[in-house]
Image (cartoon, rainbow, N blue to C red; front, side):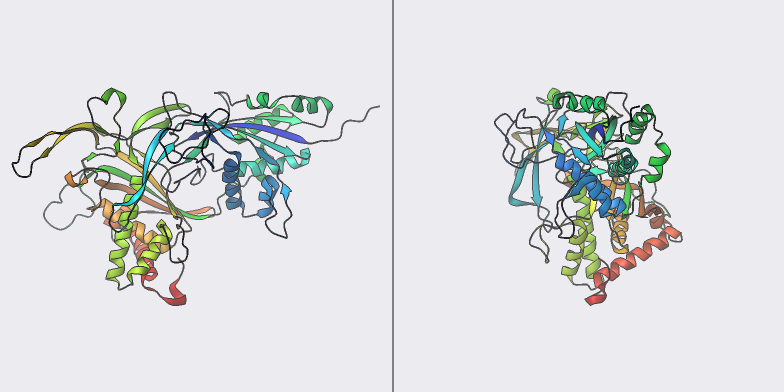
Length: 534
């Protein structure tokens, strides 16, 4: 009589296709190798030194997942169980986690290439570029696929449900729960949005000799060759469920009970519908209860090189980028912008805070420090380095509707009033259209919600600030047609329609907004220990 093998370790091999939802820059730790595509960029993408192909390091992916698990559970023991510990604290010895990852290689969309963009540092006081603060950096386009390989090691089948549940919680951001996941540089301005589009999973029982040899007998090339097929599961839970059922296990109810996908963070999100246009002039008489008429379309220009078929006819063109279209498709669409849109909202907020502080008799430096706390700054009084932003643009906004517009302009001699020879320029602009923009705010209070209300009020009525090039000629005016802010704490959420709050003073939304504005006034005018939360 032979005894059955004792339950042994179980290894899960998981592969995922991660798709970039917006332009992304994941920088290299050192200068790229000779086989990398150098170009004339100052900041290069991280690349595989053997092939020169762009990649995302395993440590970057692990950091995204570790942060998500820690934020959602608030339990360091759960984080250590999956990702281990580096022994940074004397009371916590170093340990190895159950999850192991490989670097993810990037595959660009068909016909797309690594772009080189120009970055600048703008002086918030003057709105002009700081002298010498201009650089060029490589950017991966939206639609780029990253193939990620993960291995989850379970000491025994009894540990399997708990570790799988932790893994499902860690990938929640990659699957679109909450604000989503971001990687690389300038994520606060809409760069680096990434999402998982398909998963595949294989379970290996190493308790027996056959299972052990089947797993360890393969080369790394054979393991890495396993990529998610086109019909793979779109959620990791489905891929795990299929494999567990194939091995005679029924995990659906157990995993659902153990998985904690609730978001314990205190955060807010502002969803805006922005039209490239301006409101028509109001009719005579008392002001209407709501904004009247649809915005009148205006041109917009975020400068870029013209397309290949327009290279000989246009000097400049409005920016178009690949954007995801369905699980696998990618299309080229006009953008409302990422850095440009974020800078516009930040600039409006800075002016409103300055004016409010002056009206309420607050010191100007207090308003600047408060604004820098939420929107970030190059330096702060408390630190010599940059201050991070707590208000973040989720991803680049794509324009829908509208139409391309080609214009020609010339330079006029100021003395004689005629055209200057050789100074004729043709531009492919974009006219009209709407875009959806989402701002995420970490740990919001009433004061920052009051500032967002004032920003929406300006965009919904008569905005003073404009976006892009040619603003002196009427280009780049944006109008908010819808605005909704949701405040989330744990499993509860409270939403306020800011357009209703602005145009219906007797509504409950207006009462909530007035409370936020009072909190903003308190934040700007209070001094000493009782100044309240920032």
